[in-house]
Image 1: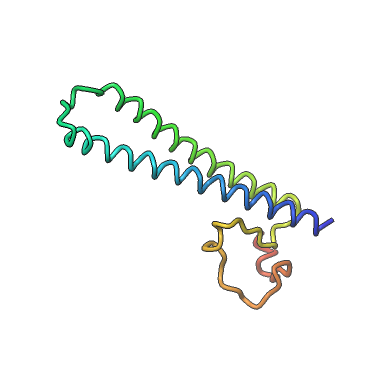
Image 2: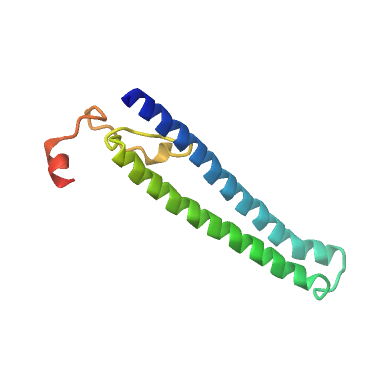
Length: 121
């Protein structure tokens, strides 16, 4: 059963990482659009008044993307709590974007908790 739980946790972690990356990519793309619009407006010799209401729609869109990102981060933390409840606390569950979070190895198996860590938990 442990093998199946690890496989399920790793597949969720990979999908979660993909979703988080997609949201960040969307934020970057909308940010690039936001910075390009005034430049395009000047290049086209269009008054800043023209299309002004569109900027407020763009502001709403970027705000929604940042809210989505915050919600996804909150979801990430809750899924981590589920992982712990599944008995996988001492196992590394790594999504594709989580490699930077892995700590230096201490010469212990992932499932072998030192006595000090067990008492602290």
